[in-house]
Length: 97
Image (cartoon, rainbow, N blue to C red):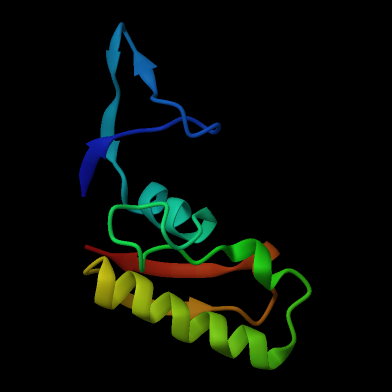
């Protein structure tokens, strides 16, 4: 999906004096991961990934289910794979609109 891009600090990315436009799928996933429920217009969107630091296996399984709901059901993405086996520091998500 193409959209206005954000920089590493989640500020608008400006290039050549204008908003930078580009592929935004990874950026959208990152925003959903960091957001808490209620930070988007749809109050259900937001994973609050920080809750999963030092997660047990049961919590990693819950995170995978939560990511499926958030990305597939609420955001409309097609999820190819999600891997939480290495913890959130090495979380892998392959999804697209």
